[in-house]
Each structure stands twice: as C-alpha cells, then as structure tokens.
Image 1 (cartoon, rainbow, N blue to C red):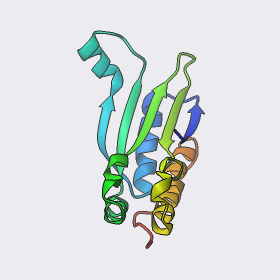
Image 2: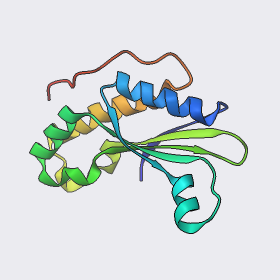
Image 3: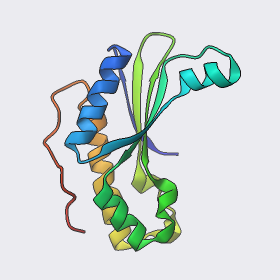
Length: 142
C-alpha cells in the first residue's frame, strides 16, 4: 500500500483541524469520520491511542472515476489517517491513488485523474505544518 505521510510535533486536534481545512482547500469534503479509539473502547472495551480515519471526497473526481471505471467506488472515499504515536508525534497519512490503482485499469484518463487527486492529497498532507496550499475547489478537466 502506498501513501503520503508526515510526522508532526503538534497536538492531535490541531493536526485533525488543519488536515480537514487543507482537504477543503483542495476541493475535498470529509464525508465520514471513524474514531478508532472510541470504537475500540465501545466494541472491545480496550484502550487505544488517538486514531481517526477521515473519508474525503471530491464529488467531481468521484463522478469522473466511476464513469471511467464502474468499480472505482472501492477506492472511495479517499482515506486519511491521523494517529498519535507513543512518543507524542502525530502522523497524518493519505492514500496515494496512483500507486494503488490496479495496473489492469491503467488508462490515460484514469492515470491523469489519479495523479491529480494524488497531487491534491499530498498538498493537503504537506501543508499541515505550514500555510494552507492554494485553493483548488474545482476539479481540473481530464
């Protein structure tokens, strides 16, 4: 599995807030949030570190992907993980769609779309520590 990742010396909630903001700047909305720590406590009665999975979606990209290949929904939404490690570092990771694209589906259009999504997800991750990236609300034509 290929993904983009950054480890930060920042509070967990601050990283969560910044990645959410950066995703919005890149045209993605957070459509699901899974609080793994809370789920493990409720379902397994075990303690776990701060760990959240965000499902991010850009509707135009999703529409294009699914119209190009009907099974692309298995990769949607794009997952972002925010986790706090034992040493206090908080890591934010996002899937790299190009590297996770089934090679049998490699068409010019799908590769272009996966590349564009990857650029935006990587920007959202990279700029957690810095100023938000340039706003890219609309998807580029593919």
